Image (cartoon, rainbow, N blue to C red; front, side, top):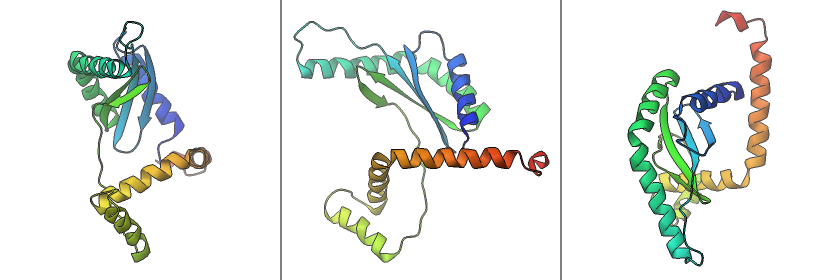
Length: 176
């Protein structure tokens, strides 16, 4: 489990290390065991009044692509440093005019054992065309749970951080 203090240190490192002006704002730095995801806000394109929704969408997509290509070398230099320091892959993304886009991300394999009723859920999702494989179906289920349980997961993470703080103050804390 990654503690809030560890997350804050990683976020602080990126806030200090990113080149000035790369992002309008550092929106989010997410850390897990495999990956650090850095998402920043970039300015939206300026369009004439009355531009259609399709034109706006195309302009935002173009702006995101332009930013990705123009900043690739600098972002990769920062990522190499961070990967060495934090021993995790670094992924990048942006928010532009309300649209969020991830450039890269780690898809980490997760092994699990499921009983028949659980496998039936996955197989039903496949039969219904929601997913092409059990792996895709399981990922779909995780995203669904994630969407509907943010409050519960936040409370659980807070509890785990409290346990970690108490554990770090125990008699065995100096034996690491």
